[in-house]
Length: 414
Image (cartoon, rainbow, N blue to C red; front, side):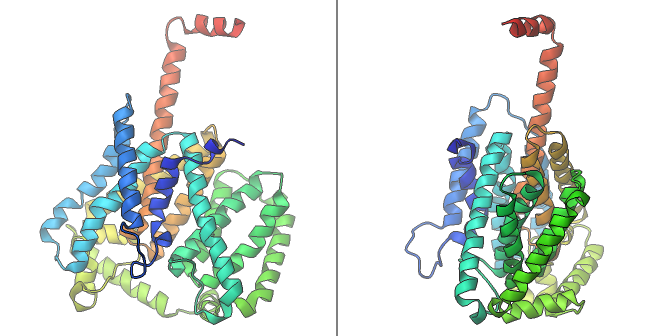
């Protein structure tokens, strides 16, 4: 195995940029002179600029498509309620979040780039998952909810979900070492429940099932093995109950039986307020507008609708919201098409699956700046499809060019 197939400094640095919040040490105790997010952002910007200058054939369409989304938010700056939260949110949106959406267009251009990026992204999520496993075994019964490193419960759960989805697709698509993959899939759902994060807990199986159906996997032929794994998973969960944090068990239990807890009640209120604000403000409230109009103390605390689509409509206006939905649809369509027609379909199927997973999470707990990974996968999908389409057109023109048949015949005879 060639390590270059799975490791690339550019691609892994970009993956670390998207997940930097998990790995950077506590600023109160850290002696590092540079913030990890800022450091990786600067490196990613250098990679983008360098590759852009190197390219002879600069495909500009994906860049324009992404840039339009951010440009549509610019007019709202004129009527933004400039409190401290709004200033911070606008600064991050037009720097780090913009970079996250644009960078993959130039860093991840080919299937080889995608393999290296996904290897880095899944590896980092695996580190979080392994850390969560150690924490649960060592002090699970002492915790309110399971967290790993400096991640929140939601981010920890999303990392575990990414690992489950990767192994789940591999289990259906590879024949060798299926028992090893299956063993991990039996244990990881218990770890996911231990976080108490209901969004990832629901989004993980939905994203996997949608992907399996979309790519024509014959689930019926595997139903016996699936049921066996489900039985083993329930057994592991039952035996692990003494280790699972009680608060997480309570949160998940009330959710499963259909009872609304404070989290669901809050989100229902957020959605109702956001929909009311969208109806009354077609021009948008400006970044941070939800906290300013519907939050506590005039927006001095960090509040948002917990749904990136509603947030785009409310704070960016109807046009920005509609365009954001268009880009999400375009990304899903692009990754789905590549997963069916691409030369390395397994990579593109993972890309589609992660797109679905991140989008589902963003519908219940998303915030535009915290959704850098979702926006990155969106830009990546649009860019990869554009490059793939350009390559097919170039090959078609070459084959149809005068004398190409003679050239192909000569190469065949050689």
